[in-house]
Every structure is written in structure tokens, then in C-alpha cells.
Length: 128
Image (tube, rainbow, N blue to C red; front, side, top):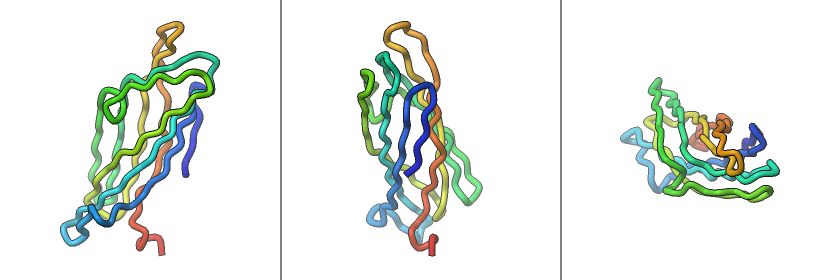
């Protein structure tokens, strides 16, 4: 698991290779990732948007922007956490993702960025 705290918000990431949804013969590799977002601030925050940078070891790079996460814009009281699972497809057996959540302090309405730590997606056989 990878974790990082920025702007008082902790982001933790776990990744899982999805062999049942992958087709190595066609260079299709599916990964799931579970993200936990925990508010360590003394004020309520809301996740508004996300920005991902996806790097595939075959040299491809992609950027993904969107509102919220998994169709939600969660509000986190101090000490609360929110967890979701999503996925990423790669054209090779290894890759990396990192990004930013755009959040808002619900008290002051000030927006700020929370860094999502880089995390790797690697087919287990490649680790041997």
C-alpha cells in the first residue's frame, strides 16, 4: 500500500491485478485500485474533481479528468474517511498512476489540491 498526506488529507492506495478481465495475448491488462481518502483537518472537505496521469511501460501516457470519483463528490467531516474501488487498463504488464484531487474547504469555500501518491500496477508474474 502507498500513502501520502497533503493539505491534511491522507490518500492510501492498494492495487490488484485482474486476470479474469485481462487478455495478455492481446496486450490487455486490467488492474483495480482501492483508494482510501481520510480527512485529518479540523474542518469538512469535499472532493470536487480528479486528474490522473497514467503511464504505461510501453511508452503510452494518458491524462484523465473528471468530476468527483465513481460518480460521487464525497463530503468528509474531520476524521472521516471515504473508500472506493476503480480500475485502469494497460497495454503492457507494468504501469504507474498518480494524480490530484481538487477539494474544497466547506467552511471557507477555498479550493485546494491533494496529491495522489504515485502507485505501480504490475502483473504478479513480472515481480519474480
